[in-house]
Image (cartoon, rainbow, N blue to C red):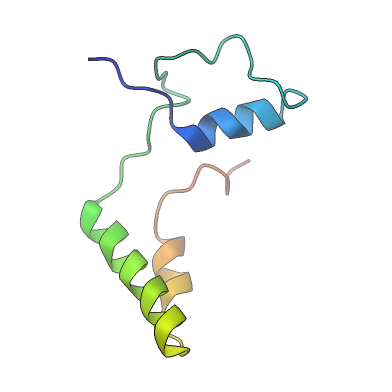
Length: 76
């Protein structure tokens, strides 16, 4: 089964195209719109730190953990 494009990639492409989805962004993921490969354990660790900071109101290292995750918007 073919993967769908990552939502963030589709939104970014639309933003760069006067708020309209470009014709080349279809219903199937391409290398440019496929989800970024990420270690699930890193995502869980970052999410836990973000949630703990929100609840405990103290620095748990969330910013650093999130910065270690791949992010296609950082490279634009």
